[in-house]
Length: 384
Image (cartoon, rainbow, N blue to C red; front, top):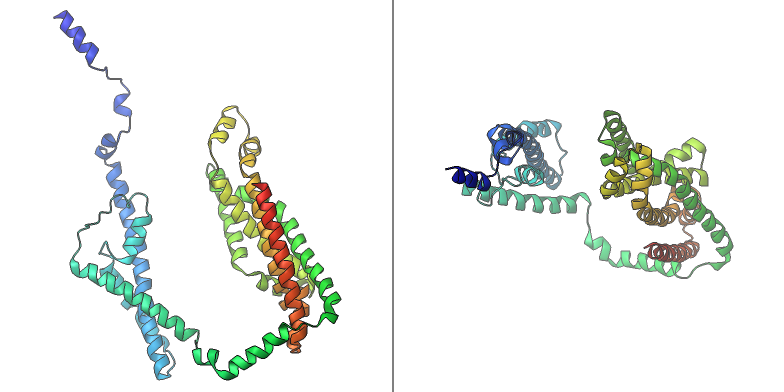
């Protein structure tokens, strides 16, 4: 009896007093927390799907009304558009019940909790599945037709004899440049290159420091960090969403027309663009070195300097060179709105219809941009 009990004890693993405290999947589900989480995510998913489907319903109604009004030559009525809002909400209320609706599909497929619960054979009627396919096809066709009408595409004007003759005159003039102004063009082109260079150099340190505050994996451990993260993200997203041409107009009024306004416009946009690229690179780093440095008792600045910076320095250099390449191209354009450089000269000759002079500027811009693109590509290859 004693031997048997010893054998039983040897073959049966002893239970620790901590076994009941381990959150195994079985205990997790049994506790009801998992079911509560699923219900919460389903409610959020339904709200998101409802909003998406309501927007699609309004878009469909708006598109049909716009095309009908344009065909009949009538103005759109605000009363009719207002009627579409409650109509789209009613439409979304019923359509969002289907797991195959566009809104439900988008939200649930992108939700890490719910996407594993979706099955190819979700309970749904054949009618609703067919309805979703019809709506999807209708949206694609409607969007294509709206694009054609709103952009006023006219293939006759593009291929007409008069249009082709005008294009021929301009291209012949452009490809017979006036080389007597080459010295003036090169002077303004050098100014353009330095506008892009200074904008990039000033943007680098600002974007470098700001990128650490825009990286969620570094800021998520404290409320203050998350506050800085959200504020800077909003500022940089807004700055980046406004094109450099708009910033050049603003700075032309602020500091006056000239290369300084163009440099400020490119610098501001470069800070936002580089901060986004830099922060995304930080968010994709390996956490192993960070955890090893933290285990030694290092402070947050030391962790960033010794564990984060070595992993991002090469991508940072590549992103910076690429941004300088972009700024070279943009610097030739912002001169059209008073940003200085060769763009200002191009605008003057274009306004006077001196197409031979325009051709000279276009050829010089193309050569310089090609050279800069070649050099930046070689530098990026050398880095890696």
